Image 1: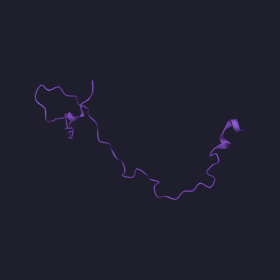
Image 2 (image 1 turned 180 degrees about the vertical axis):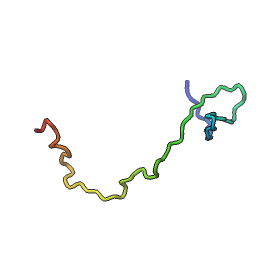
Image 3 (image 1 turned 135 degrees about the horizontal axis):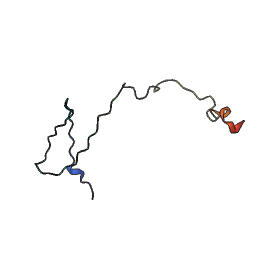
Image 4 (image 1 turned 90 degrees about the vertical axis):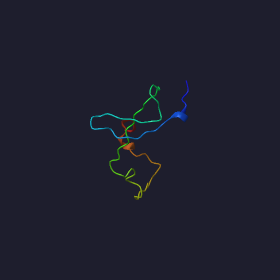
Length: 74
């Protein structure tokens, strides 16, 4: 069974204090619908890339970072 995305409807709303959702859409009483509820993502701080724009360098970019920490190398 395929999904007909031409019939998809997006409704954004706010959950009421009692936890209920009230949806109004282009449907009639008795229509069969599927409801998927997704919470909006919470952005703690607007900075998704805190290191963007900072200076960095790799003096020996092809060497192992933790070569001395490997037990097998001892």
